[in-house]
Amino acid sequence: MRYGAIAMLPLAAGAAVYGFAFGLLAAQIGFPWWGVTLMSGLVHAGSSQIVAVEHFAETFAVMGAALAGAALNLRYIGIIATLSEILSGLSLRMKLLTIHIAGDENWALMMAERAKNPEIGAGFLIGSGLVMFSTWTTSTTLGAIAGATLPNLERFGLGFAFTAAFIAMARGLWRGPANLAPWAASFFITICSVSLGVPKAYAIIIGAVCGLGLSRVIRNRKRRAA
Amino acid sequence: MSFSHWMLILVLALAAFAIRVLGLIAGDAIRSSRFAWVLDDLPGLIIVSLVASSLAGETIGTWLAAAIALLIAHVTRSVILTMCAGVAAYGGMV
Image (cartoon, rainbow over all chains, first blue to last red; front, side):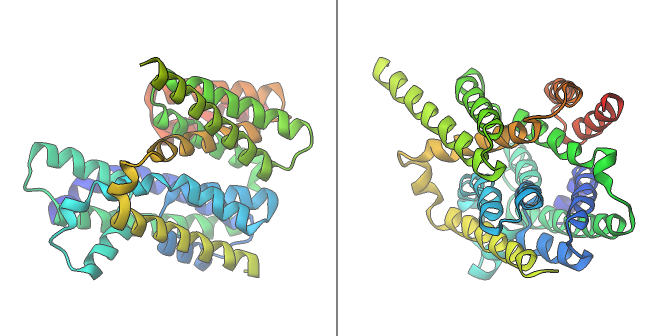
């Protein structure tokens, strides 16, 4: 457990910067610092929180924002599924705690370490997860405290900081040329929808669903060709 | 904190935890089902649509800053570096 916690520190430093920026953004749209602490502690999913809050800032629609955030978290079905063997020795309560503190960073680090040494397992995941969990709640709270005392940060490009973060996340999710057509379709259809006056919250859903449809057509055609 | 702020926290927390529990209970079954591709494809498509919605109707400077961020993301694959470079580029352009 201790080894996992120590190995996690360099990645945690990166997450702290990101968490601080998220706290700033959340404070700007009316979350008090303790509300940000509560959200980070209960949700514990960085990219979902950012997407949901960014969405909420533009529309103030709770369900749309929560759905957009949650959809981004669907990858956790796959991430948690890969842990079934590692978690099998734990009690149900420990399992639930471990999956709550498992995030992209500590999951990836644990998988990489385990490939080198099969002894590494639940202890490492919990140790590194506790470091990530405390880093995330603390850095987002500090960001929110700073954000509440600062003037409107939109002028200094805070909104664009998250557009840049999303671009980097997209790079991380890129799986090769097969993504190109669906991604391009989502991009252009969202732009067109917004230009035609569709509210952004719906434009994002229209864009994503059209991309999903195109991806489906391409996959079917490939299967038929094979 | 208004009612909608509270609701956003609670709904998002419930959804995030439900997804994790679903992964624990049925993750393997879902991953081997015929809908597995939706799990792979949807996150990327949502992110791309989000970027598109924030760039729609923006100035050429914002688009250029986004292009610079994309270049940095491609080279470094780092979220933090991309955020810093993106904001610097945006500050320089707009």
